Amino acid sequence: MSETMRQGAEGEQAAVEWLRANGYLIVERNWRYGRYEIDIIAERFDTLHIIEVKTRKKGSLTSAEDAIDERKCRALSHAAKAYMAMHHTHSELQFDLIAVETGHNGEKTIRLVENAIQYGW
Image 1 (spheres, rainbow, N blue to C red):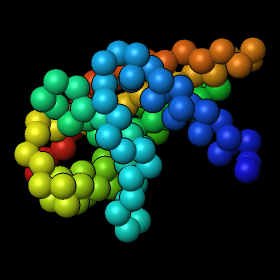
Image 2 (image 1 turned 180 degrees about the horizontal axis):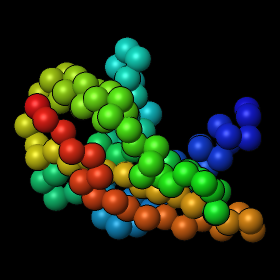
Image 3 (image 1 turned 120 degrees about the vertical axis):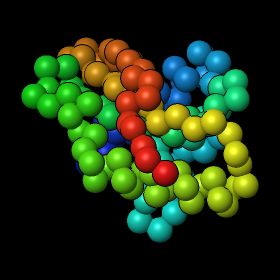
Image 4 (image 1 turned 90 degrees about the vertical axis):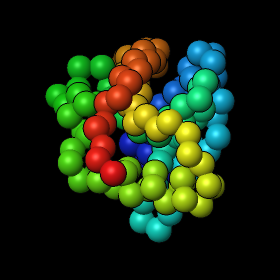
């Protein structure tokens, strides 16, 4: 496993732990539909959260938010539509971003950006 893949997996695990500690129910991890993937699908109250996780080293030149481009938004929207159709869910839907920043000592800072991705059905 490459260093980047390892960091990404550790970031996703940290995100899952943070979400659980903050009252989210993890429904799926790394859910795939064809070429589309959703990092985390979680529920909280009556909302289904489609969550993209971006892990960066502290001081990285690009922020987690900068990594969410129009192409990524379209892919997440397609994946969410497929998930909702396959699972016959009509829950309120929200696209969120979890930014995980890893310090030099391995310590992780987690930041949730709610409604980070605007979608148009």
